[in-house]
Amino acid sequence: MSDSPVIRVRSVRMAYGDFVVMRDLTFDVERGDIFVIMGGSGCGKSTLLRHLVGLKEPAAGEVFYGDVSFTKAGEAERAELLRNVGVLFQSGALFSSLTLSENVGIGLEAYHPELTGKEVREVAALKLALVGLTGFEDYYPAEISGGMRKRAGLARALALDPEILCIDEPSAGLDPISSKLLDELILELRDSLGTTVVIVTHELESIFSIANNSVFLDAGTKTMTAIGPPKELRDRASDPAVREFLNRGRVPEGRDS
Amino acid sequence: MKRVTERGAPPRVERRGTEVVVHLEGPWSLGRGIPKAAAVTDALRADPEPTALVYDSSELGTWDASLLVYLRRLSAEAERSRVPEDRSGLPEGVRGMLDLAEAVPARTRVRRYADSDDVVTQIGLTTIEVTRDFRQVLRFAGDVVLSFGRLVRGRAAFRGADLWLAVQKAGVEAMPIVALVSFLLGVILAFVGAIQLERFGASIYVADLVGIAMVRDMAALMTGIVMAGRSGAAYAAEIGSMNVNEEIDALGTTGISPIDFVVLPRVLALVVMMPLLTIYADFVSILGGMFVGVTLLDQTLVAYSIQTTNAVDMNHLVLGLVKGTVYGGIVALSGCLRGLQSGRSSLAVGAAATSAVVTAIVLIIAAAGVFSVASYVLGI
Image (cartoon, rainbow over all chains, first blue to last red; front, top):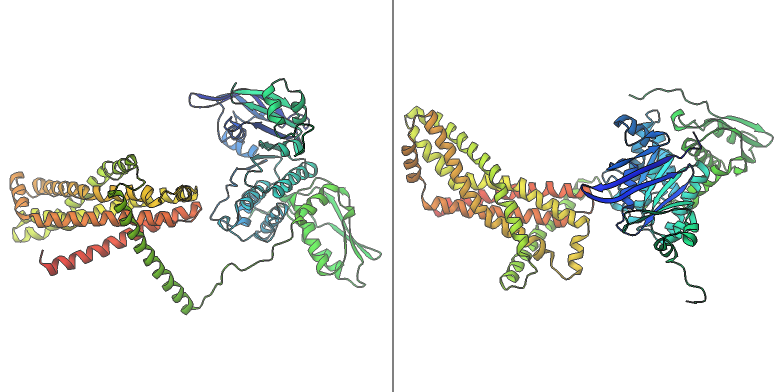
């Protein structure tokens, strides 16, 4: 069981009404993977992430969590499966009427009624410390910067020690240092807690430094055109578009700038 | 009620020579609660003073945030007792997470604003706020007038399509709710009047009562209040959301006045549509009164109509229309102003919508009072 993939995507077709975004998506995310969903803007990366966490239903095909079909699961079963999934939305999506500490604590209170209010605050403070926001526990989202909101959103996603962490565009709105710290945090989570991380991004530096597996979505053919470790795809992908995408950031040899 | 579950026993604490050893054993999960640090605190403060706090995690099972929170408590205790902490006995993952949590130093709290419970201070602050608010309303009204001037000279960044959309939303789409409210108001007035007037055998004057009251005052007032709840709130929410999305800022940096582009079409639409809606409400409410007169007070349709036409003259109608127009302006201006003033969060947009409705209704009632006094003095 523990060796089987944590997420299995089988022949998924994503569509808005009659408009097909992607078809024939089939891939596995293994336990402990840092799995990147990449592709150009508007190709459906974020939509795929929304399919993985049940915010959108596939037009065809199925998503499995372990051996359980998430697509066919009932509401209660889904809630149980999603308890182990943390999601970080692009904007952070913090609840604006709650302080950062309350934002992080809300899931803890719901799933761990045995914790006292003080303990919830302590755990929330730990999660906020992990993302470098010690001292901001009592701030409201409107009082902090966009990058900080994003990090607070990550702290909230981490609140329940999820087995799977889904992140939409982690580096959007972050400065290079914060972005690097975030990458380190993701690696640390994987190494320390064995968290599986699914990331939507087109940030090459991030892709190469942390991802060990990836899938490439192509807007033109409306399907996935490559799957595998990013470094391998960069050098050996059969689709030239994938190689070009992954080589963009490389300075050609012999040129000094 | 909190669910009571069995809590994990606190870890074993042992004094070994000069060191305090904490034995971390078994599985740790939030579900089992977070043990108290009291035993460790006692050991750290014991005599003779210990030289180090060390950990033994050889028996440690799975762990989660509960262990990290517990260790953070111990670290804080060790620091307070000035006993050095040696984390080498912790698993690498735990150390990694703790290091990460300590990587960014705590921000020393800066008080963001001076809280004061002092009544005098509060009154002062409120006064300053109200004055500022009033000045903002005046400036905003002035801006809209200037913007209208630009429109007349053909220099406003104004899209005709926006105006028509606003007209449709504030006019045509408001007709059902205005009809419902006015009809029922006509019915209610007719009933109230009938009960009193029947005593004198003068129930035919119900037509006068409904006609004059609605045309002169009530139709405009009720339509204004309905529109405050409908369009005023919508304007504030729309413009507030545009503020959240930085759309208003984008307009500004493009060199387009948000007043021209966003506010003017909405204000014009309401100012133009409100008199029309008022006439419509006049008509429907008279129908409501007529319904009561004919079905319950045994009056004929013709008699009721003639009585109404005789009672309501041009002065009443024009006064009602002027009021309607002014109320329309009030609703549109409050909605747009509150929207533009809105903060940049979902909470702030809700607050802006609420504030728009409250401002509009208060100003409408105030204006209605001014109109009443003025028309009494002028003998209209």
